[in-house]
Length: 79
Image (spheres, rainbow, N blue to C red):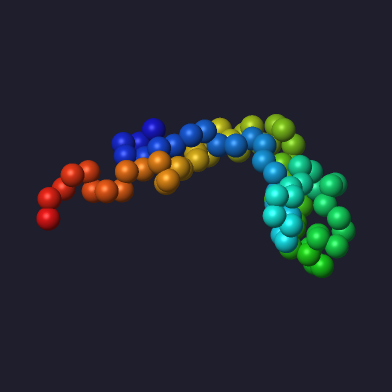
């Protein structure tokens, strides 16, 4: 963890949101209707986890940043 940054480990699983239906998510590429897949739609196969092994390797090389948890008030600096 870097000083001043709130970080976490990378994700190994995630969901892809439906482009127009708020609160609707897809777990796997196979769950996406053909009309929402590229080129007709905006969802691509690369948005999903390729395999659990690949996801774990990627997570080990990535960090998550949490900017909403950072105190951006300036740390008490005077003006």
